[in-house]
Length: 292
Image 1 (cartoon, rainbow, N blue to C red):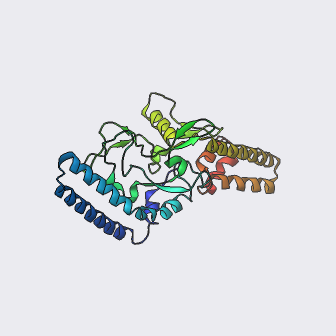
Image 2: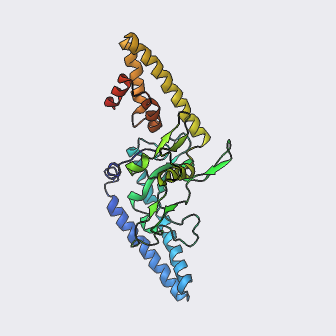
Image 3: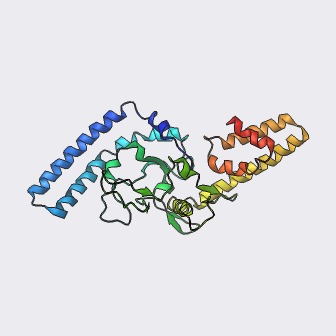
């Protein structure tokens, strides 16, 4: 997981984004009002009327899915085409626009209408690969994971059901919150883990939930990270040897490659920084960060 500044996304959105969203919301509510009127004429009241209106809202929102799809380019550019959760570059799958707070329904809560009012709010959009965003099976471990409609909470307050309710608290770490991103770290073998060592802490619990929900231990992802760690460690050893011998031309070549591995546009750069960062007691490694 890497931190994404939402201000970076905002400036990359289509120039007519707000205008298009407003027009779409009007179209949605016209459809909803028409459906509500038809439901009342059909004699529906109470819970059945409410269910009919909710169905109409979801249907109308899905009719205009192309609107949030138009934000995908901005989300991708802000992260250098990487999934915001696992930092893959379409190696596991295509990238999708994920509604962080699910727009249509919430897993485990059959009567919840979903966060329908956030369906067109770009601040609720995250860029996710299929393995992070959709439920998928890991054939090597038999683990089934992926976000889907999951949105576990820390309570209180209770889950929001309408816009005016108090903001609920996500149990999932959010890549647009810097402090959240810093609650995750990695082992050298590519496995993510909570930065907190207190298994009874909220930070540990949130990190574990995030790892599980977004399938961050998936076998291919773990292997890709571990292979990167081996490459970084091999380069470190060669560069350090060149530095100690005074072979500065050779050192500069390897050091430049290491900088490329920890730049934000590099695949799995957060993990790469953890691996190379373990050698920051070396003066020359510490100086690499000044070239980012």
